[in-house]
Every structure is written in C-alpha cells, then in structure tokens.
Length: 307
Image: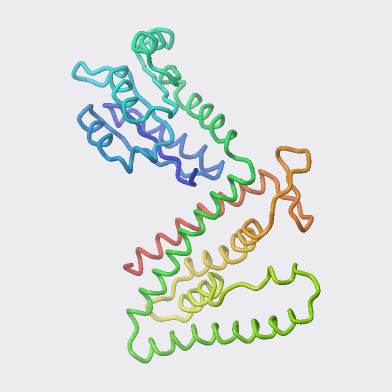
C-alpha cells in the first residue's frame, strides 16, 4: 500500500461528483493518505484505462454509477472491470435506483465484492470501505513500508532539486556547491574514522549497527537547505521551511522505523521498539500526514526549479 490511494471512478456526470471528491479527499488526508481518483466519463474512457496494465495494477478501489448515459449501465461496466481487476472493492451507486435493486443486478451478473448505495450515501460508503481496507493492512510493519516508500520518493526529489540547482549555477558557484558537498563527506569520513577506532574497543555487537554510509539523505537535505537560504535565484523561504520540517519531524522517525524491530506488547494499536520507546498507530497517522504535506511542498519546489 502507498500514501496515494488510487480510485477508478466511472460516472458520466463529472460535475455532479465534485463535492463528493472534495469530501472523500479531505477524509483520506486526515488519515494520512492522498485520494487520487481517475475519472472515466464513458465506457470508451473506461476501456482505455483498463488497457493500461500499470494503471490496473495500482487501483485500490472502484466507484461506478448505475446510469452512465447513452444506454450504458453500471453493472456492464463492473463486469468489464472485473475481467481486469478481480479482487478490488467496488462501490456501485445511483441517484435513481435503490440499493436493493442494484444488489439484484449485481447478483444477476455474478459480480462479487460490490457494495451498493445511493448517491447521497456515497461518501459514507466509500469512507466505510476505505476504513475496512486500511485496518487490514495498517499494522506497524505495513505502515513502516508505506513510510519508507514515501520518503524514498522525497529522497529522489531532493536529488533532483540538487541536480537542478547545481546545473543552473555559474562555474564558480558549481565549484562552491561541490566543495560544500565534499566538506560534508569529509566531515562524515572523520566521524566514521573516529567511530571505527571506537569500535575496536567494543566487546558487544550493538554499537556496530550505528555505522552508516557517507553523504546520507540528511547530508543532502542539509545541502539543499543551505542552497535555499543562501539567497539569489534559489532563495525560497517556504521550501526552506518544508526542508527543515522534513529533517526534524520525518527523518528521525523514518530512521527509527528503519533500524529497529517493532515488538508487539499485547496491544494491536501500540508497540514497543527495541530501545523501549512506544509507537502507536496514531503516531503513524500523524507521520503520514506530515509526509503528505511536505511531499507536496517538495513537488512544488522541484517544479519551481524546473526539474
């Protein structure tokens, strides 16, 4: 599972579902996920999406209206969807046809995994199915995977920002930029050398776990932070604040999740790490929300820089 919750939405009246899109997006954001709907306004558009195997593999939920215009019906769309997406939950809705009638259509067509509701109840139904789905996979181990995947995306954007900034500089600026990066590496080398000498005196294996690589994501973030606050064409107070927030609120949590084993202590919503600190599902929800906000800022920064 990812931070992006991908939904295939089939409805021939896009203007009629904008309010629902806004409400669903707001709810999922509160849970630390980005609602990412792909709208199909006709059977032809649906066919086009279903022919893209990469898209099909990433669908998390499907929403289908009953009346799709021009004589097309939702049950036919669901039947076609089931040929390519067999095991994802489907919400089948209508402003005209009662849920029990929709369910009869579902049974007649031997369709499985389909929830039926009215258009007015659509948001509540989607939220309920979403809650049921994420509760099945939102234990701390799965959450760790979500966080690692999302922060890997941010790491890539940081790399692209640094590449773009470096490419835009004059020769002297490029030399200084590289010198700053090299200084960070040399500092890390000295730290690792000291750590290596210290490890020679250790009689326990645990201290060895703290020996990591050179020019880590934190060093790159520091370089980006420095470039953004240095002035000139790359001065960007908003992005600078987001980088600092990411460094302070996400990276330490990411590192903890990545380097310790989470040990259940009898409570499904609370675990104790190997170093004794407690991590709850609520902590992880807050962390996901922070990553979502900062990821948006990084994407904006990369776009501004022209990367």
